Length: 245
Image (cartoon, rainbow, N blue to C red; front, side, top):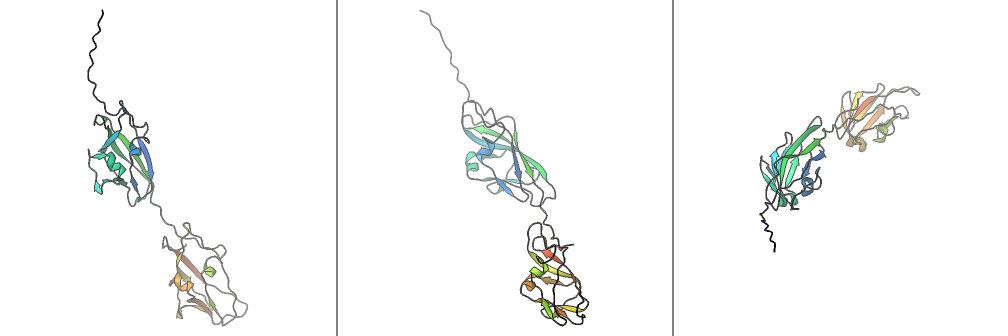
C-alpha cells in the first residue's frame, strides 16, 4: 500500500492586491463628502483582495496642498486612519479653497486595508482633485435708448420698465441679477430730475426700490414744444454691485 504525506502550511491572509486612483471635479468654495465607493468600486482599478475580504479602512499618506481634509470636523494628519464606519457616517470631508482666481489641482494620497489581514497596501494611490476657478459676477450691460412723450410743463414718472425692458436694446445681466441702483451720468438741460421732490444732479445714485415706488421723475420746465432732450444713466446689478459701462 502506498502512502503520500502532504504537509499543509498555514497561509497568511494577504492585504488587498488591487486599488486605484480616483479623479474628482469640484466647484470653488465647495466641500466633498467621501464614501466607501470612492475608495473601492469607483477607483481605477477597483478594490480587490486575494481572499475576497471586504474593505476595512484607508490611511492618509499625503495631504492636499490646497484646501483642507477633515475627519469629524478636525484636520486630518499624515498616517491617520479612516475606517469604513467613518466613511459610512460621512465624516471624511474635503473643503476646497474659498476663493481662488484660477483653477487648481490637488491630490490626496492613501493606502487601503482589508478586514481579513488588517494590513495596508504598500503603495499609495491618489484622489486627484480639480477645483474650478471662482466665478466672478459680472456687471450688467446697458447701451439702449428709450423715449417718453410729454407736454411742456408736465411731469414723467419713471418705472422700472422705462429704464430697462423698454430700452432698445434693454437691460441685460449675465447672471440674470435684478437691478440694484441707477446712477445719473448727465442731467437733462430743459428740465429737472427729482427723487422724492429733491433735485437730482450728475453722479447721484438712486436705489432701485425708489424707482419701483414711483419716487423718481422728470419735470419739464422750459423746453419748446416739439423739441427733445434726454439724460444719461447707468444701472448696477444686485449680484456684482457694479455699474454698466
